[in-house]
Image 1 (tube, each protein chain N blue to C red):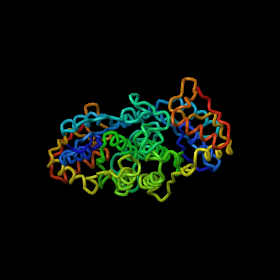
Image 2: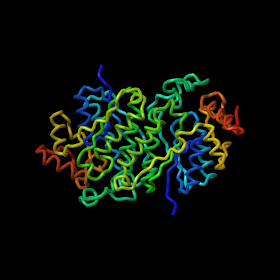
Image 3: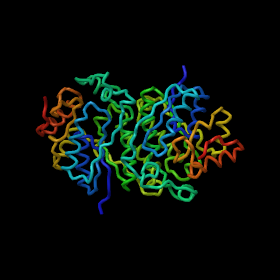
Image 4: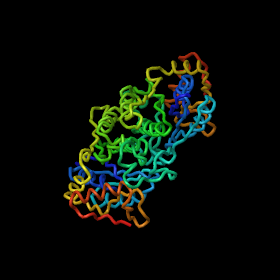
Length: 227
Length: 227
């Protein structure tokens, strides 16, 4: 029987690649997305679609109103999404950082893993993200794995919990090449912080720029629909 | 200026005592409760009331539908709440264990602490709980503190995050004596897993038994209204 795994899936490029990897590695994959009041909630449609196409067993959207906490341009409408690389990719922590977001997402993934009897959680954090976001760094992933083993029935009974972050040390272009080999259709993923109603990307926000440069560097045509 | 702190507050006896301790220690306390689909959601009224009386700066109730994940007698209506000490207090992990609950609660407390600029989170886990629940053990608290330092802006900038679990090694009777000295009115707290509409406790569930034995052992009259 295939081992169950939980894959955090945003509808973006990175987590779609992680989903393809987990499926290739033989896991029975259950994908988990969050409706957390993000500006770019249209990405949830793409999460559902890519989940089905890549062969996940199930997909759930967990409602989580992070607006009640605030503090990020991605969930707080009074803060502007940075464009042009300044805030987002320079030094320091970007405005688009959502406080403790990955900690909260992984915690809920952990709860679901316990219910499913799964010891494996996959998350798409990667090297270009952790330059700015504290909860994308390798130390964070290791600390969460340790916590998962302390916090759960499985861990306390000696069945080791694993947090898989297979993209951690890859660049965007390497992720795109890997996913393309695995047959991921990136035309069905979105990364833009401010998608329009038709699901078209702005091409200007920092997430769009990272993505589009990744396709150029990978030498693979960018299938993203832009405004 | 007083340092801000986040206190996880359930409306029960333990977390009310922790709130009193954090106030006594000079923190500007922000209390956080969860509406997580618990059977005993009436406890939220008590959380709000005790928060005000003990002098918290603010109180928030975060909606979190753990029923979407299931797996516990406390959130799954198809499972019975154990009575009589068997399931709940014998060996193994109790039916009332909510998968990864404390991990999820602490993660959201961490997000709020970041927004508030707080480095201090208080949680009421204690020695009688961690005999059965994996996420009440000292190793869990230490692992979460390590995670908090990896996961946050504060931690990554060298301002140490602390998870305070001041009841960790106390018995129920010791907690009751301590809180009584601090002026906590335990008549305004509830611990029962199946409160009735008037806020009266059943006196039979394992949480009621632990609480009531605590008052007897502390030699302090039990102010809890029972059915």
